[in-house]
Image (cartoon, rainbow, N blue to C red):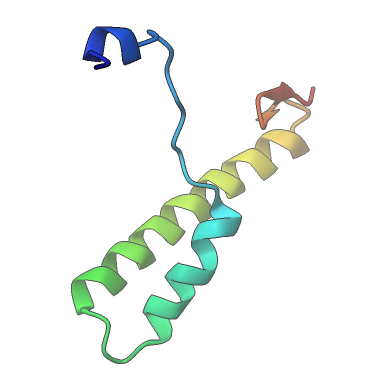
Length: 75
């Protein structure tokens, strides 16, 4: 039998979802009249947060500041 100590490698697995994968689900929730209002509010809040981040990145780019995209410095 395998123990937990044998399974644990000490490595971190990144389970962060990708926006391209999340967006169709989020749009479906927003378009579905049966979706809970709380779910729609959370999605609107998250999309607003994302828009703010992109606006800040665009402004930094216009100002000639280095920005990191996908872990790669675009300076």
